[in-house]
Image 1: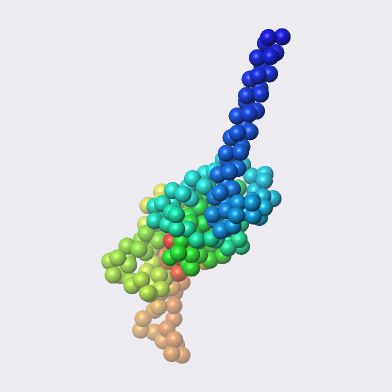
Image 2: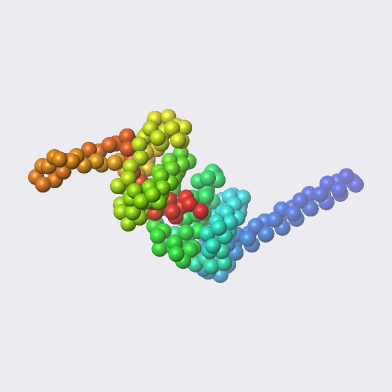
Length: 240
């Protein structure tokens, strides 16, 4: 009988601990969602409750922790602005479902960008669809191209006001830097072109004209450029 009483007491304690943790987590999530949406806790919980009910708490808690960390690094902690539900809900929903930390961070950074006074205007709804279609290698490749583009801007090869498609980067260097095969490179470039973050370099053939227009050569996989949409996406979703 004594053993039964002890085991029952232990089980009761575990249930109490789990209940307490659940309440703490719910309170933390509720406060975060309320701040994001600019609504009272009860209203925010009602808006998001049905969609988030079956999602894993640990992934949601990571969103909260990373958002606070990123907002602090960006200097907007405590100064966040409300995010429209049409952006906030799909961002939080998709972030909660993402198992990969690297890809989940894209969602958190996009949410952070939407919360910043200076960055919210550059957040596009299209970025939500883009993130959903990216793999880790796609993000790494796009970030590499963006860094190379940024270097070209800093070295006055191209001005910030010019189209980023005016500077191109060769396939051989990208493959070597990332340590990937040609097939993986082409698959990734295809996907990034499909979402309009990259494009092929188009070279104008000098000295030849036809009907007043210069003929061009599409370099395909051999030489690629980041697009204006790609630059905006990296700034909103990849860079801290």
